[in-house]
Image (cartoon, rainbow, N blue to C red):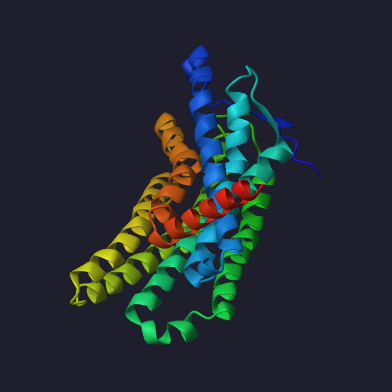
Length: 313
């Protein structure tokens, strides 16, 4: 039976506090979104098409780029359209669907980041056993688990929201159906749900962050023992790019979600959420791959091939 205090739709406040100025955000956000989509799509195409990138490292990079595209798609297109309209309405079902995919995909991206750290750990600390420890079967299992577990774990989380009593209005103080603003509308006892959310954050965010930190702790120790300065610099350059994105992603997400209790500072949280949904996907291609010498070589080869085809025509 339907919940009598369940609204048929929610209103997303978004950036309404800016008034008419919010329309000025449309252009910059659209450009960032399109560049992020294009950049991550290029990475995926390169990883699939070029045999030089058929390695575990780039397999996980391809997965991460796909996740960056999908996470952005769950929130940014609606945010962009809402910047241009006065009434920012989303159906109750639409809100639950957005909630499910945003947090499932976000959790998966952190597990993939941990997989990437494990891959670098094995490659640098155990190079002679790399082919065995990071075989394609192992990589597929790691990636499969990273995708499957969050999507399964998020089902009871979303169902619990579907049966709450929402008697404090239907205005969500955010640009998408985020967790804390949604719970603030409920007059049900949400303490158990908040504790469950905290456990989920520990399981997916902090645990993967811990795996990443431990992996890089061993990596740094190993790299410092390399006698060649150029080899150390090359290894640190590759790892440094990954760590930059790791700290941006984990830092913003831990600030937003890995704290028990309902959140405050709504405007600050909106800004930080923009980092995870707009800025990080935009930076990913530049930080993780376009600074990578192997990717640069592949891109140059593809460009030369295109020039050759044009000349042939």
